[in-house]
Length: 282
Image (cartoon, rainbow, N blue to C red; front, side, top):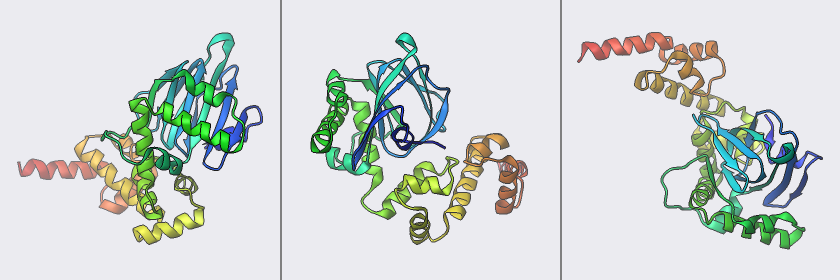
């Protein structure tokens, strides 16, 4: 799965700037590419200049649209994205990805909202474009990126999303691992992708995971997903197929086999048995 910002920074057709704790890409395509699924590895803001940005976080029912003159801010995770062209078949945006550590230092780590959305949109103050348009390098670029973040965060929805991203990062490996797994265990990612979200090498991720959770990442994920599938079957009355894919499993037969191994019944039989027991005690 392509990763943002890496896929943008490595693309020679886009002008980019990479700093220690942030990166900027001046994104310009004509015509826009087809929809694609991307792993966003850092909090990212796309300031749309021409056209419309179409984005749908994994597991969300409805897409988000950001037109010219607006920003779409997204937390780390899997997002399906595409762009719709504006004038002359062109789409343009400035894409700013920042480390959660920078956000924590700049904004703090607490907000007023209890809702932790995966994306947020808002109008862009013109000053943001001016700050990001002609970045140099070094300390001046870093200062202008920080100012652009503060201006963008004047929009309440964007500010709450960035606060949440900073808070989730935590102050230790253990906090970060717990936050990453709690937020993304239903997303069908490979272990190397979970390691990237936690900002660790794969070997460090596996070692620290076992230290924090007392078991391997693969076993923990299987157990967490099976418990969620059980909840979907019994509480939400989901179909077996919906419970499978809604719990992060990518293959129906593997899901049924794992469910039977965990609970002693196939998903369908388990639900029927539970309903019969509930009905007999009513």
